Length: 138
Image (cartoon, rainbow, N blue to C red; front, side, top):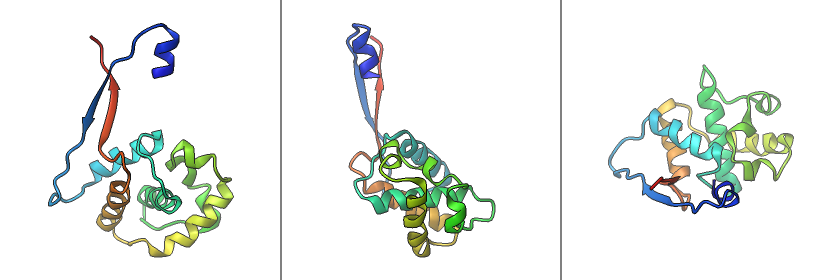
């Protein structure tokens, strides 16, 4: 957005908002899908490769109808890399990501609520968790 506006000789004005989540509030699926959208767009960045892989693996598992994590051979077809930010996607080939994800799959919880909780825990590690920038018109 910033580059497009400056190329049009417009002065960008951004607002900053932060999502507030109380510590005693149970994580729900709506928050999961909002955070997943932030991860896919690259707005929610992870510093650690394992966090990025866990988040993508949980998203793949939640998207499966039976909540079972696909095997390594099927992770690419299940869309593992589409649930990763553009930054992490370009660092390795999908086959390499599937191999890393398969080793991390053993540590994942097996219930839907526990998967959502783990995903939110992983997202909370990010320095930009809950932050949103958007363009505002005067």
